[in-house]
Length: 222
Image (spheres, rainbow, N blue to C red):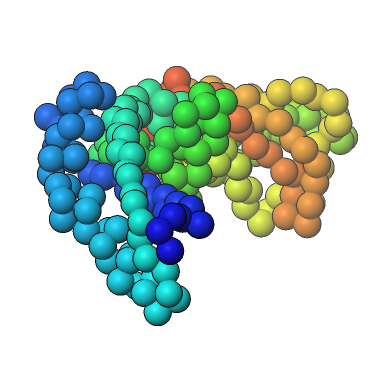
């Protein structure tokens, strides 16, 4: 068997965590540095080992060549503002934690980043962070009402006391004013219907962002 009759290709990709000075090399220097580091132990050793493993089949390595390529992957950076925009319920320390954790797997597409960061934020902190509030609305009777509840900073839902199980709000009112007790903050809520627990009221998470500091301080005050 003097000539090769089968071409065997083995392809491996190794993802390396490297020091900044190595990742910062240009393409040619990076490839050269890695090739020197691998040396004959890897570049010649693999064909030798493969040949031994193939011997029981009656096959031998006639010739071989290798191709080495490497590309530095630019580390993606997560800005604190990106996290706060999708997760205003996180404290400063929690935002800093998420900035560090989320960078490694941040999607390249900007259209996917907000959903990814929101998911990571909820994985980090998904507890209820409640602040007392009052919702101004019209009842089905036409009378105005001030409905006390608790706004969950984590997802914008407003929890109502059991006393409001029979409360029914007039349809078509549009946005309802929500005042956060003990603060000057006023938000807008939407009523999406009624359940056995009363009106279903929610504030958009994005609308919490401008008031984040005040809302978190109110939550921490208890």
